[in-house]
Length: 122
Image 1: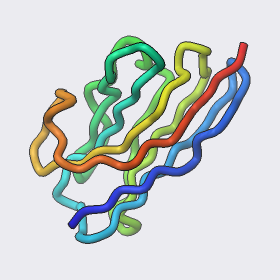
Image 2: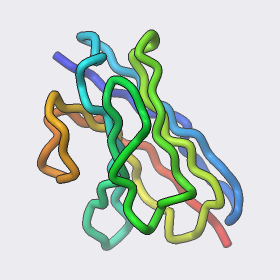
Image 3: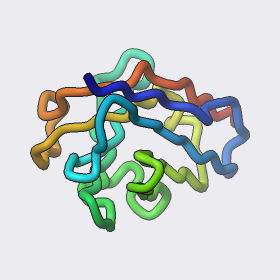
Image 4: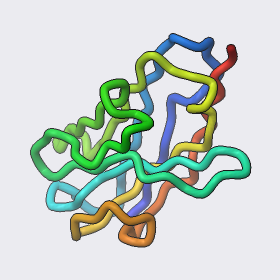
């Protein structure tokens, strides 16, 4: 089994920053692609990027490019999402995801965390 648990969400003002963490257990994920996906209210899920065993993160959509950065720590079996210059439209539930294969598709990831809420106020 692979278990993913996100943490670090919360409420921030526009222009602020948050760092989300995702801790994995069940097996070592050094060979897995680890990514982040979010779902805003009333919107489809949006792929935010993924990272292999060695960075950098890839696949950032235009909505977050230059503001969000994915990193990982294989010794800690963890993946992170640094979010800077946050905007109200970043308000969403954020999920970390994992799969053995590279993908930019929502359905390309086998394992999902439970999600963590990020709310950005204006």
